[in-house]
Length: 512
Image (cartoon, rainbow, N blue to C red; front, side, top):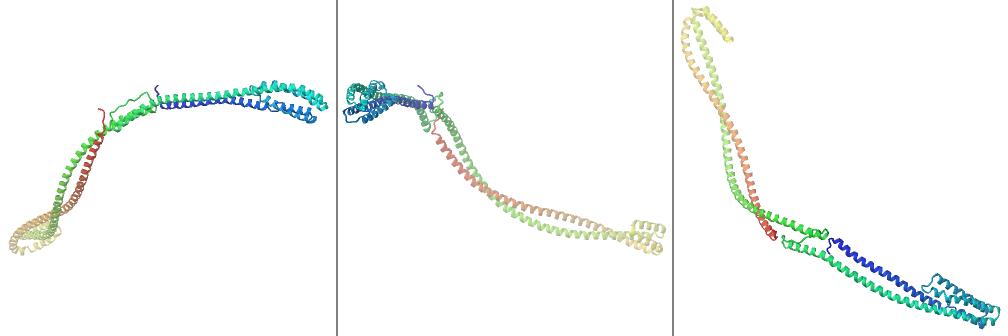
């Protein structure tokens, strides 16, 4: 027999126990009922015997009262009184047994002896009590003798009832004992049968539970020992708690094998990667140290370069100031040369005009009207300054005669002076142009020096910023070097932990 449900097995086991208890209880109740009935029969029989032997059902006391009345030891009135009392008590007991008839003794108790008792009472009243009340003692005595025969009949009925009650009591007592023995035997038999049935069913249930549990225990022990390749049979048709436990163990083994396999693969990969990381961190640490050393040299070089740039900036600033001063002086010299050029041009113009005037004076003698016209044209051409020429022309017209000779002499001098003034004007023009070029060059030099100064300032600032940046890079590189060392230590620790993890997972044996 193979049980598929643990709950159903436990229910059947409990049901067998409950059924056995119910059977024992039912048998006990049935036996108790029989024993109660037998004991009741015994008690009733004994009560009947106990009730019929003494008065009032046994009319022996009534017989004694009759004898006392006949013999004269009790007067007639008292005899009647006791007679009536005893008859009343007899009737009450008879009524009691009629209402609660004794089982098996109804006929005997209310049969012959009762009929004889009624005859005895009637005969005693008519033949004994009434004559005593009438004062006829002889008739009462004779009646007592007649009534005694009826009394003996009543006594025989009582003896028969007593014998029947005693026999009934003995029979009921024997049945009671037999029933009690049978009840004990049946209870023992039912108990033994229930125990045997429970033990058999318990063995069946135990086998249906023990084997799967032992299988689960063996599988759990192998898993605990690291053997994930072990296999135990699983009852796929079983759907109770034990079946679920077997399936859960099998699923746990499968999942754990997958997890351990993945962990083993990943731990080996982590170990290899951590080894590479550790080697890379060592290389990175060396390169970072080299970079830190180079940055320190770069920082020193930048500090030196910043100092030189600062010196160049100071020199450029001084040169700029000197160029600005030279430019100012050159501008002033240019202005003076310009003024000289202007003056020389004015002198040249004046000399030219004087030469013209001398020419005019020279030709006054010949063409006075033409000279006046030319002077007017020149005056108109000269504008505001031409008015003087117009006056000169008019005076020349009037003085032409007197200044002819003097004009020729002056013309010669003026021509010589004009030639020298032209040479001076040409030199002054060259000097002015040269000074303008100098001024322009100095301005360009000033602008260039200003640009150089500004560039030097910007370069100085840039060099300072570069120095700060290099310093920050140096600090960051040193921090990176420290972090790289820490990372290398962490990678080495990770490598050790991965190696330990690989060793820990290596205890599990997987199916291939």
